[in-house]
Length: 245
Image (cartoon, rainbow, N blue to C red; front, side, top):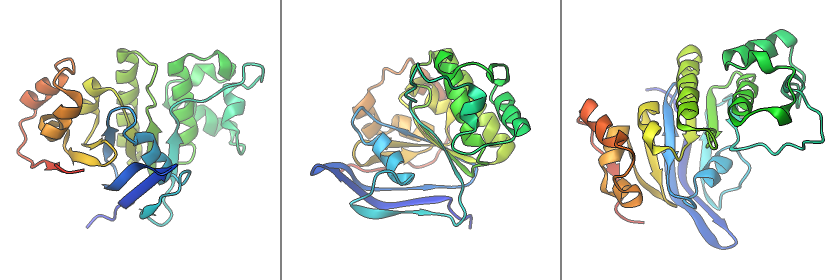
């Protein structure tokens, strides 16, 4: 049996007495891409922050495989425009990396030509690639991304997801990400977790897309991608859905 990289068991998180996450459990195995979807306020970012140890849970636990290395790509990075920081210098924070290593990672994410540009001058897509390069410097077993394509257009998002898939194939790392882009998430994921304070349903993309709980949250209007996906991938797996809160 494959040892889980990460296990989340019966996680409860409350903020100012309000329940944000209620009895949430999930597993991440080596080499798989898992996407968490859900409406605004469903607890997606809170779940990631709890997994990486920023937000303490009120109940349940997060268990990492011993020695697990995690790379984290935040939703956005607040940059002080008055502070001159080049991409290359940014990669040296919080600890220096060799020039060859930094150049290798920037090339790997398609950002090799911007090493000397100011961080504050980058486009949204360029900045996300730099943040991904920085996460990859840790040689992670698990990449965690919190809506890393927010602000990118559909083509830019698709290119970024394809890059993640290439990195997964090259390195064998697993990917756990939050996404709001239902029209591309189906093709980018091995498993999908639909979250709305609790796990509504989870499973392979085509199964989640047809689950009543998913449709109740998102409807059918996802640019036709979900229906197309189901027709092209006629699998027979069972959905795992929760009809109660």
